[in-house]
View (cartoon, rainbow, N blue to C red):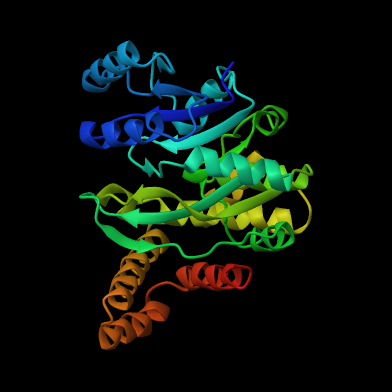
Length: 307
């Protein structure tokens, strides 16, 4: 039985990204693992051919194809029924793990008595160039519990945890766009110990699709609801969360939120390139675009206090 089960879901990733991602797992310094790959797009023959070829070369890979598109949460829940390992590592199909990721995260989790951990990421563009690095995230469990009142601080693609955590929480709940945050909040409320390994474990690929998503405001509304319940020591009701989002979601607010997100990302680019005058211009614009986006920035600032 393998010590670690790495679970990965694919849909329509570029083949060269997918190869780089899979190879980053197969070439880990820690060798006692299985890679469970689920394809959530049964018509993607290119990925089917690639994974079948990988399976012939490395018996640590187990490949499954969904009969129909299930979405990420249901696909990951299916993967959780297939794992054999004592520990589970998450991996997105276009990201790249550091060569010693499994070794270092396993060591950190076991030595410190944690149940679920994340790690730091480098943000890379579609060509693999570094955009910026996340330098620090909350590590102390008490600080993480406080930070989670405002935002997710355990990056989903970097998760490494005990299989029993995923089993006892019965996997992911179907809460749109916030499945990972909901899982983390439930884990804390159920008494599991969570931390971050404060070293880079992953190159996270930022694509045009991930930057220009149209459902960012919907995601923020779900985040508001479930974190407000968490502050009260409660696990959010999925039905109540849906009603809250339906009540507040509208096209005008969503468009303004997305516009503010574009300006905020431009501000980050200006900061990284030291274009401070342009940076100030972006920051002056934000309050006039979306008050809701300012709430997001406020939450990010509050989280930074605990890093």
